[in-house]
Image (cartoon, rainbow, N blue to C red; front, side, top):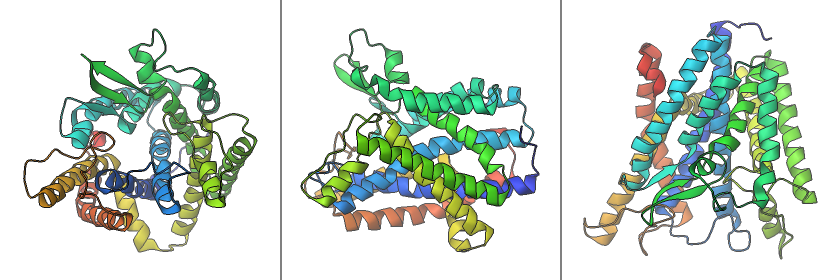
Length: 396
């Protein structure tokens, strides 16, 4: 068992976690900005019709959900190192899990659609459900939590042969826990489950177990993180090249090297396949080691300090960026359409009308401007959380 570590030492290690989470939050906004503002009408991850910069724009954001979920688990482990008991941790995880699921339906989804008639069950829902599961798992030795995570991640693709979302007798719990799918209400879409809980609970369990690595001395922490990252990437490459197992989308040798390379990295996110988890967590582990090393040598300190601000208030940023993107998209549509009577653009279901979308360079410019605009609100709220210890602030 890892001995408790001092608050000062723990704070330095949490800084690395916050920097990595901050980068995840910044990159995440790129994909959502593209959803609302892009004029491109091809699937970004289709290797036969996409092109490298578009593919990269979508693929790089694949790091966000597994990183967000895994680091939530890591944060739980680090909180335990501050002396929080298993009972206290379980109570907090249960209440926070339920609260996050409620916020997904009541706050986050309306920010995407500006309506309560349709709901997305996305990453906040998955984190909430995974926290409820982790509330029980954390009573076990950490190695058993890691084993649970590995079993879920490695065995989940055994269900690829079954269309669980549409199988005869498919029930609500299958959609909520195992496979993505749509809930219908009198023939109308009511909710889309994109992030079923069970597959993502495995990612959170692995993140919790990774907390033991974060608690190691600096050199050992970075070395172990690199070893784990390279091992995960090696497993991904082996599975992808051999077509052995781990993803319903096969790797194909296409007409050009570029298309073949895109096919190689075109892995399944909904739900997260074994290959998806291996390649994304592999890169994230290497980034963790890199940022930890940079922080220890105070390299690019000002830039990392800025990135860390976003990582200290992830949920606040998450909600704020959705509403900001959607409101900005509405304003742009009003200007383009010369009327206030416009239907709000909704990614996937109701994209911007012809002439209202933009090229990728413009999308990137909007993304950078948006992230920059959110810095001061995030820094303010991070300061509030640092100065005050109100119990309710820990739920935001």
